[in-house]
Figure 1: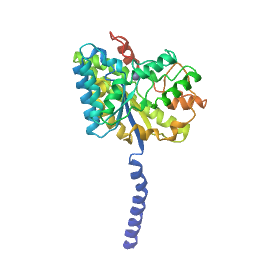
Figure 2 (figure 1 turned 90 degrees about the vertical axis):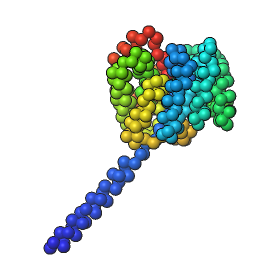
Figure 3 (figure 1 turned 30 degrees about the horizontal axis):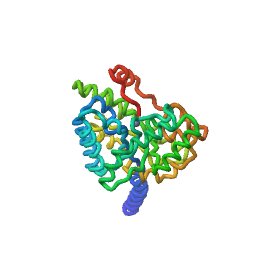
Figure 4 (figure 1 turned 180 degrees about the vertical axis):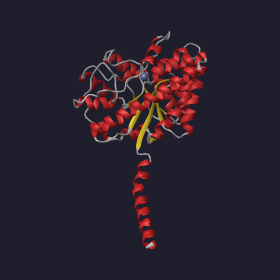
Length: 324
Ligand SMILES: [Zn+2]
């Protein structure tokens, strides 16, 4: 009798163990994401010295390198040309390839395809290649990625396709984004608080940023699954600012907790999702998941609401932060 109960207990235990195996398997990271960082050498470069940009870049890249997280940085070369500071600003940019990170083109002066004509926009791309190409060549890397400023891909399909053909002809691959938690909007307010030593506000902003990031990921992970049947290899949009330099380690932890592992942009772009039909045109630059959804006639609804208090604080700043 006792023996039978023991055997039964053993069988039950074995069954329970077997049942938990798939759960353990599920806990292993299944999601993948590439990190991209725009508006280099610094999003708020106008209100920083070249030395400060070097300090900020070193801190940001130090964390990424220590944690072996790949990233591609996108450059606006106009930000390099500040009288008496050109050397420091180029130095800050050169830290990227020196740390093993690739750079891409984000136009010379952050020009929107929706606002300047196609010809002017193409000239912006050519003009934005000079220093970046040289720095990459020193490390045997090639300039191969392009990110649309403001994510503006054109107001009409003809312009959009002509712009894409121009990029391909010049050897570029377009770098889409799927995840964006508006760090640029937080960053202006954060950098102002940092300058004033308002650590309470800094922390409040970081907490809100991470909370909003989780909301964006909750939404778009589900939305992409509903739309295309799975979660694609994601591409996250961040910006070169003090918010990321000081706190990107916490953001990486947040993403790891969600089951992400970090991959190169090249790896992310191998996902066939990035070849889905995309006929999006419009005034507002947006995530490529939105592009695919709008193309299929299923625009995103009830998207997470960005905290109004941060927008109010940002609008109250003497210099408005620039958009992505
Ligand atoms: Zn940008």
